[in-house]
Amino acid sequence: MTENEQINPEFIENSPSVPPDPAIPAPPALDVDPVMIRAERVKTEISRVIVGQEDMLDLLLVALFTGGHVLLEGVPGIAKTLTAKLLARTLHTEFSRIQFTPDLMPADVLGTSVFNMKTSDFTFKAGPIFSNIVLIDEINRAPAKTQASLFEVMEERQITVDGVTYPMAAPFMVLATQNPIEQEGTYKLPEAQLDRFLFKIILAYPSLEEEQAILRRFRNDFSGVLRETVNAVLTPSDIADCQRIIEEVYIREELLDYIAAIVHNTRSNADLFLGASPRASLSLMKASKAVAAMAGRNFVTPDDIRYVAYPALNHRVILTPEREMEGYTTREVLEDIVKKIEVPR
Image (cartoon, rainbow, N blue to C red; front, top):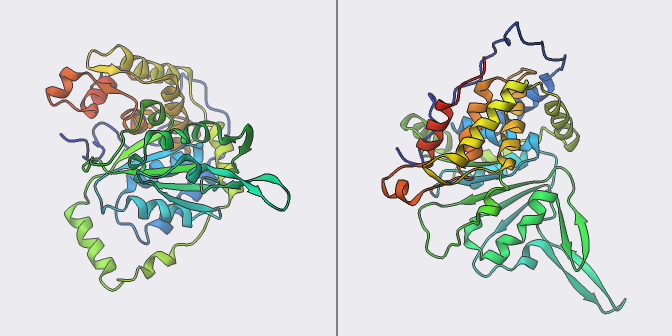
């Protein structure tokens, strides 16, 4: 089993629309239809170009609706960058792309203070990070000091330059890509930065049927005209409304304990050198609420948590050297953890 395999359907199932146990108090009334409808609009637009990758699209929307950031990992040519650009096209927001290179400096990302000869004063010139949807291509090709410039903005939605704090406009989402194969001239992301991503989505090659569909769709579109057919369908107020609704989605106490048990087990597991942080627990809770709302439910089920468990945890844990040498993967260890934890009824 490899890290680039698709999400295992036996490990993460689609969330069923089954009502909760009658013995458990009913969740408060909440209309989640706006979230479900808006998510479908975005997926419909992106599906004009992208073939397959349903899980990736769902997880990207979960991140968008919860204010999270996403790291897309996969070999070149499987539409990581294209999907990020198409997602931005479906939103009435600003978009910027930053190509990370070994010579990129923090000021090239954040901006810098420029001396104004007329006023004899310094004026801040904002960098490309000042946008709503920011695509960082090949994030692991920039040195550590440039990667570190993202710490504050990804967590606190602000940057500090020369003692002055500049807030980001909402929504703010970082979509980063990296290639797991070619490591020459790259700089591994530190754990502190990986922990700031809601999800790390590992993409695989398309199936034979999907590749055939890709060829048929683009056989008369060499210049990429099809991409221009993707329309903006969500405004910042739509996204804020979805975030407000998702916050109110009901999650019972037993499921909060279930999330805590999963994350706590990563810290005491003999196969893992590093376990997940409390930020991971919060990420699981937020993401499971979004999954429930996108499925048309105002309550969270255990399967919602299982659906987001691997993409929310795989970049936050580290295997022990012994398990790495034995050929284990983080997927296998996380699957085993989730299977061992008793599912609340």
